[in-house]
Length: 81
Image (cartoon, rainbow, N blue to C red; front, side, top):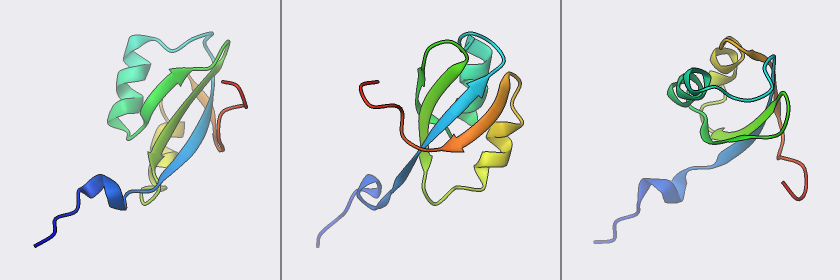
């Protein structure tokens, strides 16, 4: 019997976040993690990047409603980031 790990069936979508603060604070980072953002990284002043489960696109509204998040866009980080 063959067993597959759950991660083999998960597709991810990159997201770009614009913030109203220069960098992510710990509370915002925690809230975004609870909302489903993984691999969250600061992206320079007023920006952050992460990934979400591709089957959970509905969390975008929840992510956009978080304090300090002004915009959520689908898309990979800039080349070289």
